[in-house]
Image (cartoon, rainbow, N blue to C red):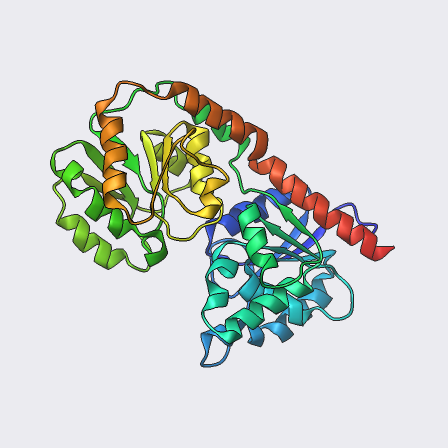
Length: 358
């Protein structure tokens, strides 16, 4: 490889914010990027055409299209995101030994999808075995991938937050009354937001806490109905926002809360730690790599009494956990700066491309 700019064929969901953010950062760091996607997003991308009556096989139908893109764009690296989807496409589309595949895991692609059916597990395994390097944002996620297939190489690289947003870290740690809690996970069964509404109803009713949720997701209509039954204005919904605006909204809250039943290391948790929120999450393996009872609070999944006790204690105490929140910021500075972590992924891709071209 003798090009100054690394050419990356990015196969990913063009609707997902993480894809747009990642592609932009690759380009800011000097890469030439072509994004191809089955999902028609707002970012610049080549729209792949899924065909056939079975959605799970759409990725199979895009293999000839992807091969043409490989020939036309001549990338140094193919970088699929989500093993069971675009990772599977890349595994079938690449012919011979070049270019290398660097596969990014997103969580559910190895934690949930492989357990849906034999077909889903086979697709995921094929993607993992074919990839020249697999990147996950937690050791837990990479270990889950290794339980499905033998990996040629692997790295743990968190998503992280952009350095410029660290300036939004709180200057006043005092908890507000009512306690302002943000739950920045979309309305989907895996994120378990309905449990939070049920569990915290007594605190919403007595005015101790105020909750903020995103307004969208597959279960948004049902969730809105449940919000309507809560005492006004104890629950707020926000629409999609530009990144800076969203992080500003998050920074105006006291507590980050997640009830997710399955997760790797949540990007939203890292963002909350960077901004100075006090983090609380359901106790699941991926979350434990960033959160424990020394730097926030964990509670047993679906245990409404434990969650109420944790929040009641925050409402009733004067301690603002300033040292804890400052140490969380220090951890983010050390391990989760987005620009630094994308640079580490570029280095992985560049090294693979250079070794392949020798």
